[in-house]
Length: 316
Image 1: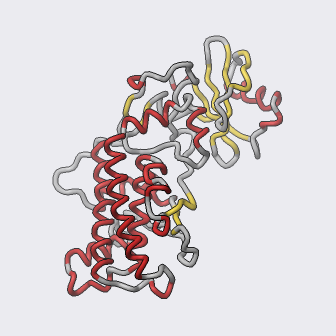
Image 2: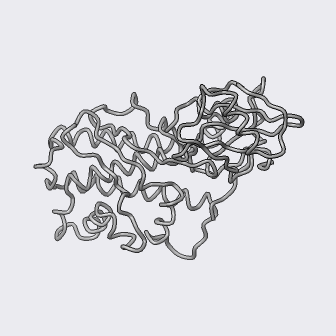
Image 3: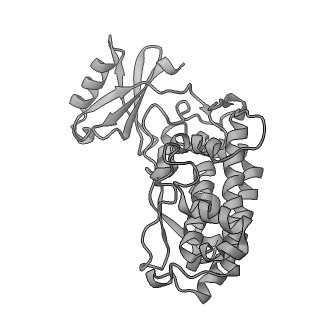
């Protein structure tokens, strides 16, 4: 069925239009609305159909030209605990890809895991808010350390590890023995973790954070994420390494908690109303999924889609 679909992208690769080949026509929908705005007779090729669309609807001409791409997944296929297409375009994006069926189905499918992740993050954010009542997040306090910071760093990193393990497990990853960062780093390109950037809400003096920005198997799956290396040190040798339980590492680890929750279930899993605003992270940059990576359903239907029509595929 994927042969019946094409995605039109602008020059930067951002999806703009979805084209679905019907029996006797090609139906075209804009990703920013769920309305069908052009239906043309079937052409000999997708390229000819796309050219006809652009010529006929100059008001929606793609900036810088565009190209047609074939989706990489079949309709209604999804990777468990891997949120796509992401909220970079907004809620209307999901509506254009099946009348909201992707968004509503994905949330329902992951309801139990999403709720557990929300509660775990909520408890951590409350502890983090308590820390920020004592230590102001400013550059001069970045190296401040202590026992409360050590405990929060350990809890935050174990929550991140829990998310890593769950995504690998749900996507068919097999290994004898315990998982390590050499296994976890395989998620980096699949979740686009290094593309996430967050900021501390209401703390403009603290710089933007990319907790996974330097993560690399080549540079060392543990050493390339300093906050995680600090966690390993303070977990195993408190007396010698307590100084590594510093505010800077705790902030990065807490940012990683938020990112892992969002990357699995979407940004609404930890909503702004449910955590202390003084401790909430807000996304400043998100993964830019391309047309071959996103989930999609069929055209909007008058009744809710049957959830059984969706099927999970695995990354490994």
